Image 1: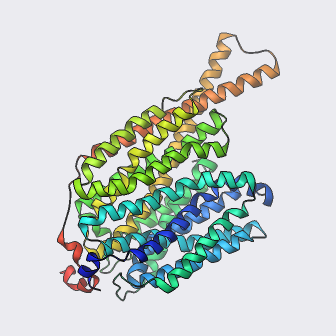
Image 2: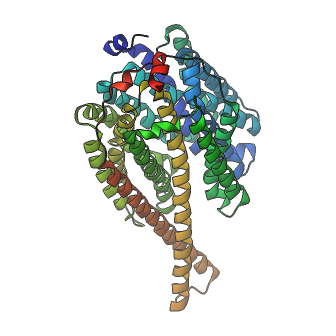
Image 3: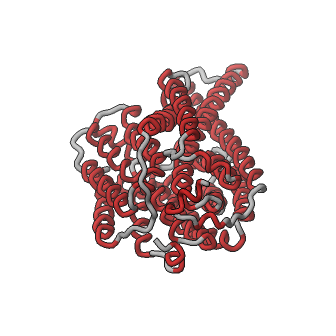
Length: 502
């Protein structure tokens, strides 16, 4: 493959196919969340069981995304994309007609096998197809897909569930999936270099146990509690397996996931900022609906509408920040964006029992504006320092860390919220009893308890947002150390493997 010739005329048509496939797969990630209560009633399953529709999907992603570096190097992008879309389409059809809950879970896992490959594959194609000076704009368009699709999922899902059945959600996705598959079959060609590799099965097992265990353990903590043997047991096992996996990769000449890429300082720094930012972003996406629906009593659909402008702003800003990155670099964008994120997150920590709907929408949208200025520029700046041969490892690492840090951050902040809520609730009730103003009737006590619980939850959510503000400040501090990189090693191809190793 002539890299210079491709850089002069990137394959926009082919990239558009990959974009549509990735958009459909990412939209599917969040589309089912609002429908879980309806599915729970239809199949008569408990909340802890219905959660497997999202947990199972996430676990498959946690297993396959770290292995994506191997698949991208071993197989052509055409073969990999077509396989991923076939699996995703088959999973969508099976989910739409699922006669039982077990079949629906299996269908979601088949979907996940396809979608897990989409983002690393698309990112790697973008890094290959565009020269370093134009990557910001290209990755900005990529960010539009990555950010917008998951964000509009809950809003679309809320509207569909109010008017149709949950099966319609899969019916909406299916035509786009089939059309993308057919179009890709006729139009998709190979542009990413490949080389002959052998899969280290033991590395795959360690990776699956490590990342899968951490994701499952931290994601289950909110439901089962930190004292559950299943929670701390899977976290400990996952951590041990992950350490063994990292040690094995560092000792291998041809690792499944190359951790030596962290010797590049800007990639290491971008990873650190992305991890911290993922914690702040995912916490906001969980805490905001919790506040809006539980404290303010707003319906799930209108809760989704409240968050929609933020998603639209992120989508519109992503290409803009991409162009600004090409012109000015990542540091100025990261500093401005994280300053906006810190201030808006602090304002979210000051919400009250009567905060207005449009005020909340305004603050949340400004917060999303700040995050949109940071995510793709920081990630692209880090990837720019890697030689081309390391691109699959860089994209796999970024996608894996985003999943893991989001799950861990959300679990920790939800735990902080719960503990704060419990202590505040106990304190408020003790104050009422000490004052002698407690109602004498059962009805009055029930009403008082409901009011105190709402106040306690508000305090818990506010405190969690305050912790999230501190987390964002850490990311802001790190962003001042960013430097613009433009290394010629990015032009190395896979055919120069032996030369790059010397």
